[in-house]
Amino acid sequence: MNMEKKYQTAIEAAIAGGKEILKIYHFDEIQVERKGDNSPLTQADKAANSKIIQFLDKTDYPIISE
Image (cartoon, rainbow, N blue to C red; front, side):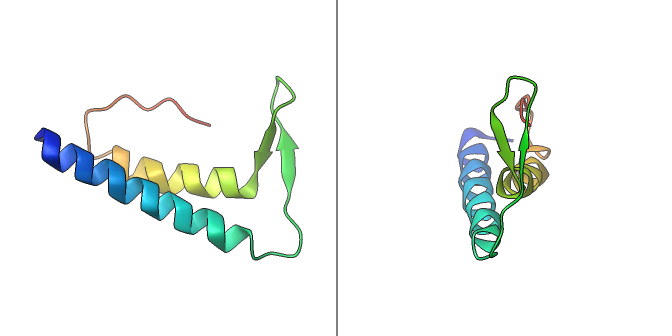
């Protein structure tokens, strides 16, 4: 995959992840979990993470995420 295609994939992933976040923020109540270091992890974080991984799995970039 050439660099231009990788950049395009990253941009599309960011946009798709943002759309997932916006879907969650229209809910009346947002569920928040706590990670081992006590930092918050929301439904929006998880949804965006899942969507972004769908895009990045198509690249050779290593994925470090939720």
